[in-house]
Image 1 (tube, rainbow, N blue to C red):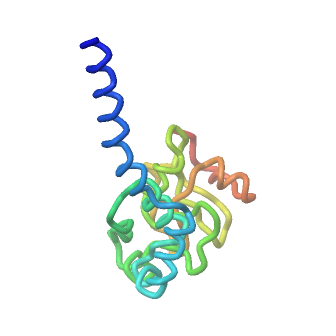
Image 2 (cartoon, rainbow, N blue to C red; image 1 turned 30 degrees about the vertical axis):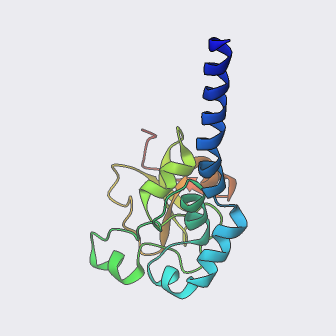
Length: 150
């Protein structure tokens, strides 16, 4: 009888404590509405809707960080495309969340050529975004001819 009571207590505790966690997870629609409510500020910071929704759905209470600029060109462009396409991110960290085990590349959106980490153009072209290599090739981009895959 005591064993049954302990098991029932454990089950009730597990259900009681897991319910608030499940209730706090936001839906994609809720995250999209949050991003749209702050659209101007998010675009100014270079945060794409897709990146925001990804972070929001993961349970992060903070908005994705804007791109870190390392050059004067990056500062003026915010390292994010003017009209971000699917799976284009202003930061390498956001792209890594999407890619998981895939390769993150810097896609030059004007030339449709992407660069691997370690190349001088990685993260430094005037109009570009971080992407998964598979997404970049799916959008018709190709690797730079003078680069080898890491």
